[in-house]
Length: 342
Image (cartoon, rainbow, N blue to C red; front, side):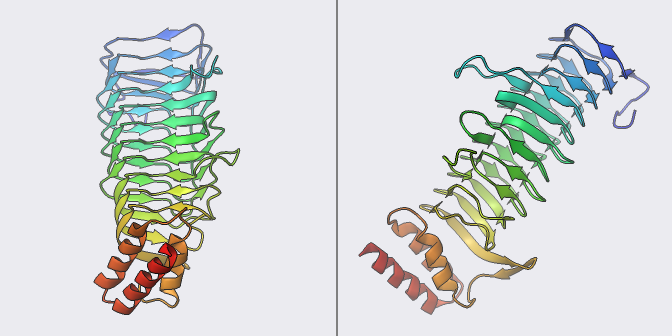
């Protein structure tokens, strides 16, 4: 019973076949629940329930509804296979795992889980509060869209090595619009076969895509990353390979930007993007981009990947060089701006 705070005061079940619908909606569950290596013939309804800890580990479940649940410690779905049916129409989507407006004082652990909702939402967790964070490591796979709109993740979101694929008709793999988090970790081989959307997300510490692959929507239409108005301290965008779709950073603000030769696709939206400094990843070492050979030419080419002409990216770049004490480079940026304007 590793992982439960009070293993002697728990309902435990292992290796069971559970037939019928397990309905605990609105229930007050006084002790921890631990279900391991179980096979559920029908879904589990925990909506509106209150509990100490709930663990459904290494099990097969045709859908978990846990909207409005209140959990004092943790929700553990490690290594489980959670599935849902197909959406019946374009306007109706089906969630395999629903955590809408749930409140978990500890962590939500989905590490090693595989969550499948063909044409629907693999995870629907708008308004989720997870004080201990959300963990989607150790081979986590989502077939369908993962939605955490407006989530409050004071313990962060960790998706190291996760695979997000088959996002459905909209081509969106992950949505964190207006989410508030301490950290967002999409590193160590994270793959998104669909758009990653971070519109208005606020990250108190680091947002990292180090070693990630952002393939964008399978049909090639839509951005690989849409991070309009995103705010973060560290923004590590040292990818494993070039994104297939647009990277949209309009209005985003970061203190430190880290990039490499694979960071930027053919089109980058930079109007309104503000950064404090830029460092370049070379052979695993982070070095200041300012003052490097061909630095100005490289950064001006980066700006020219934006569609049309916008003065702000040039002015931001010029300001960065000037604050770093490279006035000659700053003047070169202003000349490039004038040429582009003409």
